[in-house]
Length: 286
Ligand code: MF3
Ligand code: CO
Ligand code: CO
Image (cartoon, rainbow, N blue to C red; front, side, top):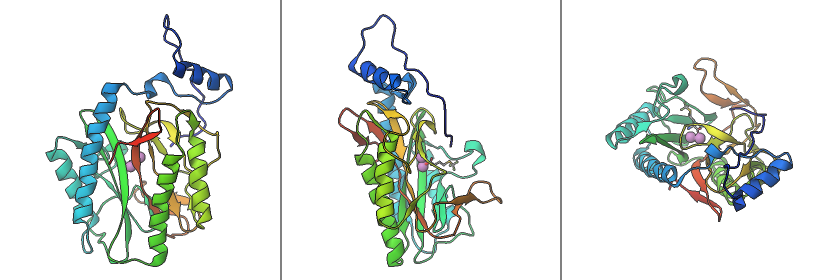
């Protein structure tokens, strides 16, 4: 994930009158704000493609929800994801992405994200696990993740899972057209802190749709007005990682992927891919 990029200019299409959107973007640009490049605003055709990818991705997660149980290995989850996705004409985006070896991420308890499915990791009663799937269909990407509780867990972990979901919902609700990424981040941060939790800062959501990870950086910890202006036609994820203890994380040096909480306390995350419309966000991964 990247931070502190130089703002790109908004280019007005030559010879055409300014649209209402052009005027608003140019206004914020003149104030020195980070505004989207034109390519981040999806065409109706691209939106249709991402919508279809979203439907398949949701079906994959629904299958995981139906099958996941105590005694199952995270490798078995990965096989379900691979088989179902490919049988339905899709490609699991994580597979071979920057060297990632599997078709989904499975992040157990103190693992924040990017956990690698493996045969030795067997689900036990009381575990909380995030399964993160991204599907490519006809060249378009959709990305979502859910938490699953194996059997019964502690009241503390149950609350963490619930509040992490609320953080996603509250962050999405705060995203209106012509607000900033930071407006959503501030709402997420407030809800997490109110519940005694912290928000991971080193990883963020992202634009998605034509590639796996696009601009903008959808950070989840921050203040109103920070980050990029969000305008209709943009497609991005919100995926707050909420920790029971410290917000600090480290990457496991053995695999260079698995992100773990510094204090090894539990972490929870939910993710959806959203389309910004004139009215607010539409979920593309339902
Ligand atoms: N799906 C993750 C996200 O939400 C990215 C996983 S990258 C992988 O952005 F290579 F680990 F799969
Ligand atoms: Co994801
Ligand atoms: Co994502």
